[in-house]
Length: 538
Image 1: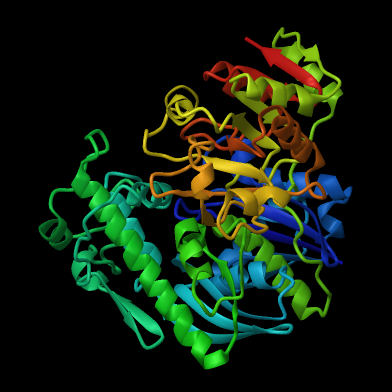
Image 2 (image 1 turned 90 degrees about the horizontal axis):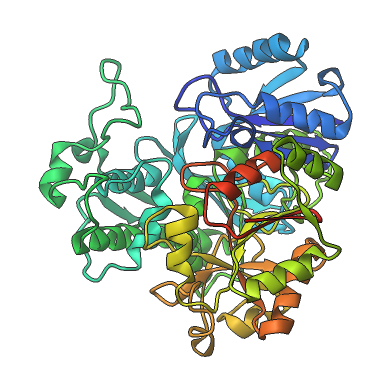
């Protein structure tokens, strides 16, 4: 049975377009449309290119797909339009079924975990009119416990603060999370958000612009907050203005409010169900500092976060919920290297198309490790592209974490982004506990960990101002090439860690194809581009 899951849509507010293909209970391929069209988040787009990639990987046509799952169920019009789109662009439409947006999020994490019992939280701005969904995963059942409707939304609360701080909503929330660590004084936000008794209340009536039939939801070019928020917090920061301490304090306060609210919510339902595991999805689930706080709760034995927690991951949920309804057993998710890959011959052809001559190396891992140890910044393009917002060692920029100036250099000359933004470490899975407090398997950069005191100076460029790092543990089983690189780097330096940031620059999607990597290489201060066995130098 082939099931195609899709997210996306036809309106600008429908974003994170993606496609995934399952053959029975196994993922064949998955990719986000933004990588193909080179437009971040792919707003208002259906995942046509991603669908073609998934079908091509399986060697099938649309006529061989049994069911298409869509990450929305309350809009009959949308489901019909998806069928029309498939007939128009692929010449055929299988049966199209809608799955409730928040159920798709929940299914995407729980049904592909190894858990047989877990609290499940889906939280984002909204989908199918619901912003937060709490459920109890029991065996193969997802039992609803709590449904909170939009605009009473944690996602909207955090987006509002994101806008007030001069960043773009539905895009820059992670900047607020990073900026929060620089805060010192807590701002009273109790009039915005309250919680207790298994729910919360976001005061959208006072602090958001009114939304209704005569006043549609503001576009992303417009403020969603009202004058009352300005009266409470002061003048909003313009994007061109410097970041002051009051901005850092506001980010700190909003982050703390989110953490306390979510921890209270989950603890309430833990006490109701006795479940000691947590599964998280939805855009709010990308807040890795919040996830660290949840993991630290005394009653939590284990936690899993969907690596593509945004709406892109809901395409997976739409597919797996349909498969679960059909009684098909699902393989747990082992990795997210599910996108396109390119042979050395294809890479060479791309180089030649630009009049470039690469240098062949027999052992790219050893070569890259030597270059990183020598202070070079390496673009690392290998194997199948990652699914989700994080580069995990196949479409990455790598650097030496020992250099205390490397963070500033990467932000200024490679990524072209704000100087407060931290960088993540990729660490050998077997060495994680040596470098990080309570270090454990964390392959998707979805949680922060405290850097051990005796490693902070040695890992200067990945240790955030609060002493934490958002780690990726690298397993020999799932990414042997990247594991070998870090092992070779450790042999040279004694450090089992490299800086790992995504192969892109600010405002662009992660690179998909060799041509994208070549453009990024020549458009930034990267020193070496290693694609397959080919090396490009400046």
